Length: 232
Image (cartoon, rainbow, N blue to C red; front, side, top):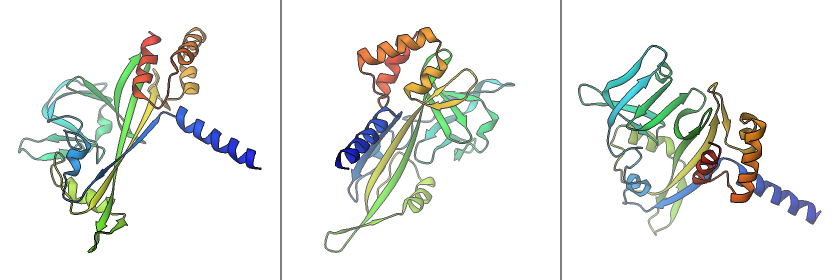
């Protein structure tokens, strides 16, 4: 029974390492800037709101608005003519959009995904989710874990996402998922098995050899990009 339990544990570990997913946690002390602890851009994808081009079957070209992607809320935002920051309320109107040189796709069941690399017809996309876990600081320096993510999201939606300070200890939990997207736009988790379903037999053999030779990890974005480049 001991050996059976050990084998089961090892199999679970192996499954998590080949899955196209990455997790990271950042601890932020009360009074420190939570958004800046995550990145110099705060919880925005880009340092500032930037010109964008929107694409669908009927439209292709630049927008008069400036856009930025809010990683914390998972919403695309723009600055309207009055200078207010607004959420894009109907993203399904567009097949994709380009902010600067970065391309985003929107899928109803997942949200916004960023194009990371491509070897036509295979494209690699990433989806980043951020959650905040707060700890109330007690009178004697102790802490009580709370689940106030929804409350913090409500507070932060109405403020700039470049800077945000909290009077509680905060843990930032980041989860990144990677997906393959084929020519038909269908998404699949970025695993080896799913990749092979999109490749010809010849390309599948090339990929198999490269994965073994380079020890490609499917939970590392750099490795996934290297694999795509090798398939060109």
